[in-house]
Length: 296
Image (cartoon, rainbow, N blue to C red):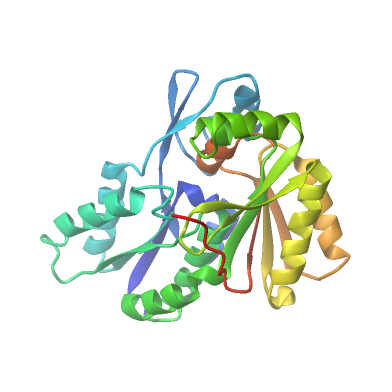
């Protein structure tokens, strides 16, 4: 018997193939680009990823929003009416306030459905690392664990699901307020590439700088091979913001050193892509617990 349903959100970047296989859904966020509002659809129903990133390259920056409150309320109440509890695996609270929005909605709805439960988990992750946590939760739900039992397991494990990455340019991080303007200018001038990790506090932390694009790709290969645990049992998720050749290089180099169960390559979704821009890459996998913690 399954006691609860699992949801994540648009920052998880999870493709339909895996949502269907594991049986979970996601809460839609929104973004604005070129004066038009879009739903942050992970199947790219309203705009293709190529057009999205081309627009960014041409100066049309995307502005993102939180989960849609009405949509969240509707999906939550739908679960409650059907006799299920509701679990939301949310983007890190250091990157989005969506988890708090869902908590407020849940508090209100539970007055109407006091016999039900809603658990909103701050994953401290984003990208496919967040999606992998949702996969884990959905699998436990299918096995008949309760929402409380599952929440405890997820809280214990979540820092083993990790995302590391780099960017094509510092410009989008600067616009998003992640680096100072002067640092972005000189970084781009001298070809410095920050290496970014979803750290133990849930922040995107630039833990290292390398010189040049290839060095940044090789750094990610090293991170994967050094930190991925039992790769033959787990999928390596590689995401790119319209730089397929570079992410394919990572995949090929990894296969020379370790043998993941599968290497999945996909476009980075519109929410994360808006913050770090075209040319960005993230690598997402299950491995050694993240213990890096940048300054708050």
